[in-house]
Length: 430
Image 1 (cartoon, rainbow, N blue to C red):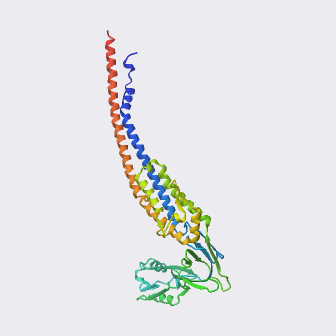
Image 2: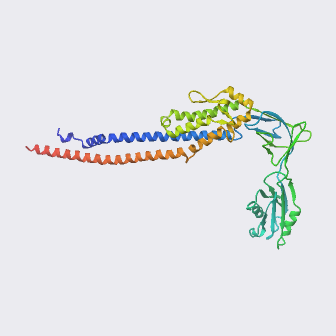
Image 3: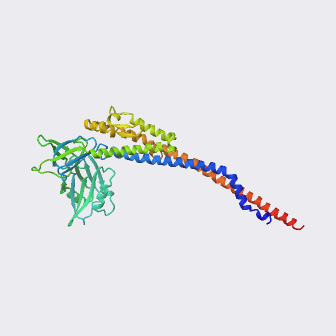
């Protein structure tokens, strides 16, 4: 077999190129994997912190406090009740004497009559007044145009105008958006030169009061009743921590509605478990991931968390109310101390956990710089991504360089094959 036939230029060029590029390929691959792992770890941490932050916000809202309470009404059709975490267990008697309602006036108009082209239609709501210039309405304006002008007026702070129809009559109904005796409406009209203004003056004179502006009135207690008034049918400050929605007026022969507030022990346990699991999940993800365990920013998050739990709230430590770390650094609850604190002063415990200066608020403040999209972890991701992009670019340049190397080797081995073939041909002539 001829020597030149045993030479495969492509194979030899590929092998020589692979030997030459192997060292740098390994280095770049190691760097790329390192940065990719770091980037994924930081992304996971940011997601975990966002989820934990959402959980904290939920627990800080009035409806989802860690210290859940139950609330019941003996007549849900008369009033409904909802208890927050700072509500104190107890029983209350409530009689609904009057519901709050908004003020509503109606004026009758002939739908076929032309609307005045000038004059000022004025509305006063609880001392805040504004006027609609009839001359500013569109040509051949209709009653709907006047209603739209009222609703869209820049100085309108709570008035709604609508149209109602009954037979041959069209009514312009003007209502205060908020209920309460103070939200009284006063309407007026200053006519201009257009005689059609008399129709508005007449409609005002004959206006009907569909609803009177009035406050809600309830009586607390059955023997020596305390009377409470409210501009709204939702009472939030009558019984601390309890929201009462008034739905129906009672008659003189009705019995007061019995409202009972109590602790929801199972819900409290479930909420605590959810919170503790959320915290331990975040901290555990840092401890168990080598990329985060050795990362200064991740360790800073962990240390700041720990500092929050070691602080004092309402003059007491979290340890004193049963929130503690075990020897492995895992957050846990001492049931005995927690139940004792809950029984002795639930309002203080609620303030320690969910108050404006409580544990959850401080945790939320701690998390916020890291969890937001353009926060510290977001910036760190950009830095790592930039490093990864640089490695990728180096790999591309290395690949291009190795393509040139392969072509060089291929040319050399091809020439070698040609030279050997020529030599063998020359020697064959002797």
